[in-house]
Structure formats: C-alpha cells, structure tokens
Length: 125
Image 1 (cartoon, one colour):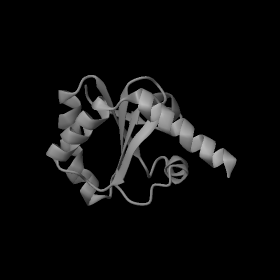
Image 2: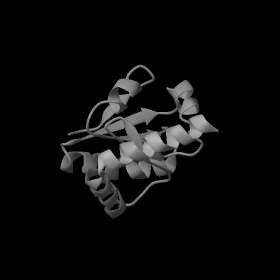
Image 3: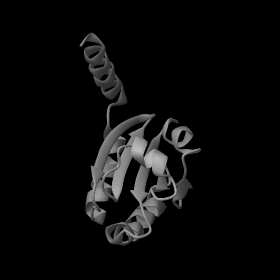
C-alpha cells in the first residue's frame, strides 16, 4: 500500500478507525523529512495491513499546532484510534520495522485499560 496524504479534514477519520495508522508529519523544506521519505514509502509497500499517512505541516498548520508538533519529521503510530507512539526525528529502516512489529504485537485490551486508568487519575486531580 502506498502512502496517503492527510489533511485537517481527513486526519481524525483516518487515525480513529480500527487497525494501525502511522502518520509522518513533514515539510517540503525539511532535509531529514526528505531523507526519511523513501524509508517510509518502502515500508508502506511491505505492510499492506498498515495505513501509512503523510501530514504536510506547512499546508496544515492548525493541525500541526493542535498536535503540538515542534520538530519534524515527527512519526506517530495509532492503533484502534489510540496514539501508542510519537517521536520526532527520522528513524532508520530497521527501527521503523521494529516499531511496526511492536505496534502489531500490542495487547490492545491492556492499552485501553491503561488509558482508562490514566483518564480516571486525570479526572480525580
């Protein structure tokens, strides 16, 4: 599966569905973003069960601000609508493959339990 472009209009529906969605936040002027792009594209072809999305931070400044993206590239991983990973900086191919494997291996019942626990603690403060 090739990468898809997402915008402020399509971001939420893309990341809140079932399954795994990776989001690469990038900008055209960013050298590390351009260096990471072929790695991301190649990985998208190897994992047809994962959605690989690209978010142009320049064209979607409000969304980038709402996501608090302060450095690019920023890679985010969502599974079943829950952000399970976020990190700024390009990562090498082996690290990207490892990340995808870890996201696929997550026990989502445990992740949902932890999120509910964190939300309950936040509500109690």
